[in-house]
Image (cartoon, rainbow, N blue to C red; front, side, top):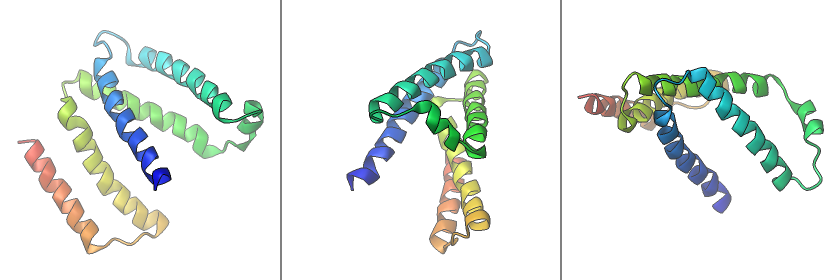
Length: 141
């Protein structure tokens, strides 16, 4: 059970801190310059954590296992970061931006799961989408 819960806790905690940081990027700072610093720190931290969690590991050897997903993930993560930073700079509130984007994300992933991974769309999932849409209406009132 712990192996199921701890990643969720990391995601929730990190996402909360992420939103605080994304909103805290100075208005006058170029977003891509900010991302350069962010990813330099992320690269160093990731390398450090590789060595902390992998006794005697060879990080260069691990790079040979990379595929298209590793490269594309770097690009789309940048898109996520830049999108949030620009949204905050445009005036979105921290209390609504993630909720709105995650509601649309949930709807999009429902269809992705159905068409790409042949996951079942149940009536409870359809009801969940409807509740998300009603929630968006209330949030944006």
